[in-house]
Image 1 (spheres, one colour):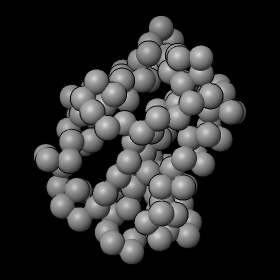
Image 2 (tube, rainbow, N blue to C red; image 1 turned 30 degrees about the vertical axis):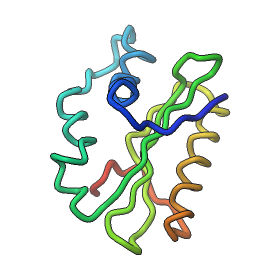
Image 3 (cartoon, helix red, strand yellow; image 1 turned 90 degrees about the vertical axis):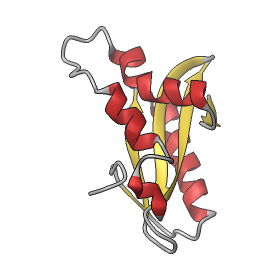
Length: 121
């Protein structure tokens, strides 16, 4: 299991398209609006990032996508949160993603993590 932080355009695209990659053939999946997802994650366009900050993480098992998480803080000294949560039926991927998000939040002084919340309540 490998967890990588999303830093560039291609990785961000993989992050937004992950639900479709994992469950796109499931007829019960309500398709996400990827344009809206991209807007919400764009630090230049989303007003959330005027004060808040976030890190995006992707999990891979044997090179294949297994899940995603965003760790975020709404304001300096704010409460740690996580969102954009999507994991296939994989406990190891879920655990690795939560730990990576929690470590990122701890590095910013957060003692706890609330979620899933995708930037706002």
